[in-house]
Amino acid sequence: MAAKETLADELAELVRLRRARDLMDREFESPLDVEAIAKAAYMSPAHFSRRFKQEYGESPYSYLMTRRIERAMALLRRGDMSVTDACMAVGCTSLGSFSASFTKLVGMPPSDYRAQQHTEDAILPACVQKERTRPRRAGSEKQSPEE
Image 1 (cartoon, rainbow, N blue to C red):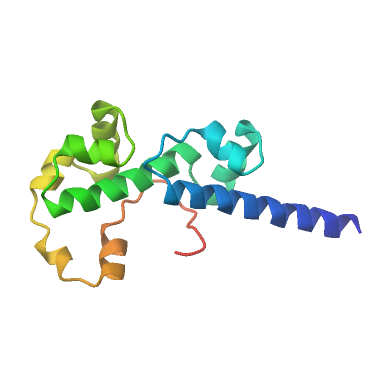
Image 2 (cartoon, one colour; image 1 turned 60 degrees about the horizontal axis):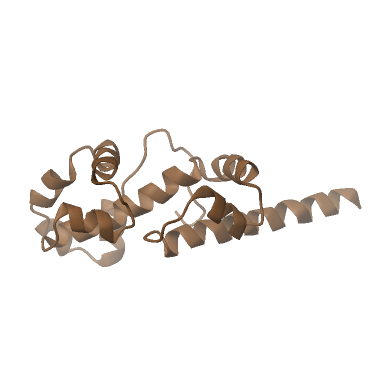
């Protein structure tokens, strides 16, 4: 009976981790921190951070920044928004930190990314465009179940 309880506990914890990840996906522009996200998963911040990294291959903060930068890339591809406006629109409060994270993840500064022509991506179906333009962190081997 103990094995069933352990499996049930593990599955319940995975559901709570997924709930927290979904929160980050939905509300990336909100002022989220690890404590608030862990609270949504009914876990302590330290346990949540450890389990999130174990399951998804990156820290909760790293995952959240990737979502924010992914959305900023979409805003910058449109060409009608400044880098500062895109930074603020995705929930970042420091342009310097945003630019550094963007450059590290995308491989170029956001102003250079904005200046590029993105017409080739515009003709692709949205699902292909999203996959093609999604930023990938180096060393993040574990993929989410949807990918």
